[in-house]
Each structure stands twice: as structure tokens, then as C-alpha cells.
Image (cartoon, rainbow, N blue to C red; front, side, top):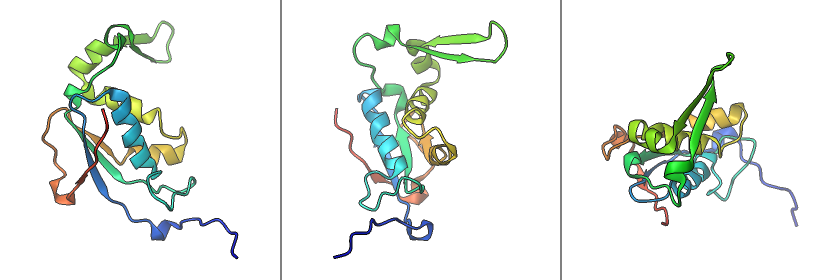
Amino acid sequence: MNNTTYSAKSNEIESKWYIIDAANKPLGRVATEAAKLLRGKHKPTFTPNIDMGDHVIIINAKDVLLTGNKLNNKVYRHHSGYIGGMKEVSAKDMLEKNPEKAITLAIKGMLPHTPLGRKMATKLRVYAGSEHENQAQKPEVWEVRK
């Protein structure tokens, strides 16, 4: 009986393209599914130290939902690095002006904060509307539960 753990090699990895429709689905549900696909955790050969993930296209980002009172209470903050450089944007404003950024930030926060995680994040494409420019890759539809 062989008790060795299988570890995938970088030349054995096969990458697919998936499309997720975010319309009328909670932001967190969409983000967790996308992060799982980007990381490669849905594959039986998942290896944590190798980029096993697939490419993810998210459409209808403008129609994503925030549950509870997050639309009014949630605040996105970033700092310029200078004194008094704290910038705050409410979730309501972020979803109106730049819904792609709200989804991207949620997903990036669920990926490893390492060079490997940054490489995984490059496989993410988010579009506000239902049109995307990746039809040539023939993406498969990935269902997200509500």
C-alpha cells in the first residue's frame, strides 16, 4: 500500500474557463465561489503551493446584492501612505460607480496574500454588464447558490 500524498506538477495542470453570473446573488457567495475556482480547490488534485486555479469571468457585477444593512454601513477604506491620506467609500457608492472593484476586492481578500495569490488574481475578469470579451475561450457556466 502506497501512503504517499499526491502532489501535482506544474506541467500537469489543465486550466479551464468558468463564467459566473452575479445578478441577484449575494456578493460573498459569488466571491467565495470565484476564489475557490481561482485557487483550484474544486479539483481533486489540489496542491496548495502550486497555482492550480482556473480562469473566472464574472458578469452582471452591477446587479450583485449586499444582504442586511451592509449597503449603508459597509465602508471600503484605503490609505495613500501620507498623513491624513485615509480615503473612505461607502458600499452604496462603490456599487454604483465601480461594482467591478467591489467584487475584485472581495475575491482578492479570500486568496492567499502572497506572490502565488497575486498570480491567481490575474486570472479573474469582472464585467459590470452581461457582455464580456472572452467568448473565444468557450467558458463553462458555474452555478452559485443564492
